[in-house]
Amino acid sequence: MDKYSSPISYFWGALCTLLGALSLNDIAMIIGILLSIATFIINWIYRRRDFLHKKKLREEYYAKYNQDNNRRDL
Image 1: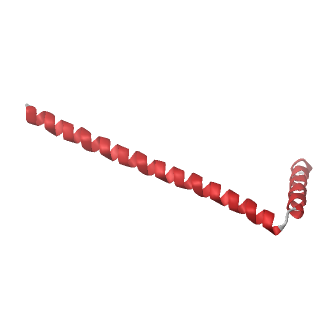
Image 2 (image 1 turned 90 degrees about the vertical axis):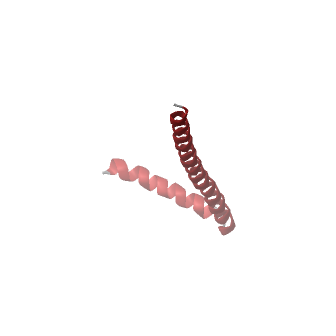
Image 3 (image 1 turned 120 degrees about the horizontal axis):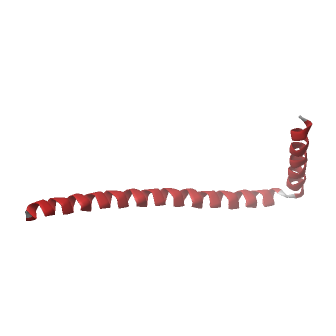
């Protein structure tokens, strides 16, 4: 048990030391930066998913359209 609790306590001690050295303005700035990066990543993921979905629908439509045109030629 000591094997796991000692590194965890060192981590929390270092984290509290770092946070204690920062002012509220610094903490707010860091949180704002992290949230804007997270927003960018989430937005990029959903836009890419939407693009791939529309691309799939477009390919299915054109495949069906081309298949119907091939039947008419016969």
